[in-house]
Image (cartoon, rainbow, N blue to C red):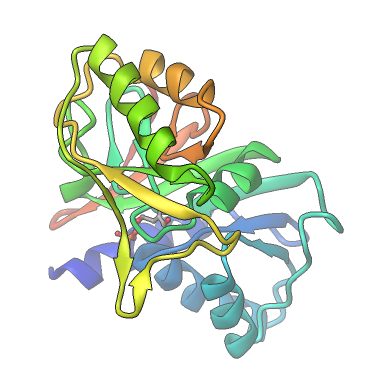
Length: 231
Ligand SMILES: O=C(CO)[C@H](O)[C@H](O)COP(=O)(O)O
């Protein structure tokens, strides 16, 4: 089974949790897009959901495939969000934001009764941090914000390069017009503490540590899909 087949497996298993009439948060990234494709087939066959996308990219795909959307302001309380992740640990703590949508993803997941993560085996880790931690910052004062991030990281025994994410034509800008700093901290033994410290830095809009948000992960491997709950 190749990587795409594993993503489709996880997405198909997640679809089983979606009920007719649900208000659904729809994630961002290649795994979430496989979910959108399968969801669109069901919608075409008469299944009804009201979807709230976590990014402009996901919104475009949904509209292209006939999945009707509402804004989070129109539907501020959701039943379920299905989204991918860059890393998942045994407590269902996540690193997200590889696709740059972490702010909307976190707002949408937090507005949902439940968040289910879909991922392939390669995303499961013992300790978060091999994947660079995305930190969304306001462009104003970005250097001061980076220095503040370095200081809190250092207090927690973390160090490593922090770089401004680039796109083909300059700095990558999120859907909200912010920058992403990618922090190469390596292993993050106390993700809860780091999340709290990052939340307290004024220029940090949001960070990619999702803690206490997901309640189930569907992990696909060559043998099929399995579920993970916080241990
Ligand atoms: O957080 C995300 C986007 O901001 C994605 O969910 C994460 O990057 C996983 O993407 P993929 O399914 O393509 O590996």
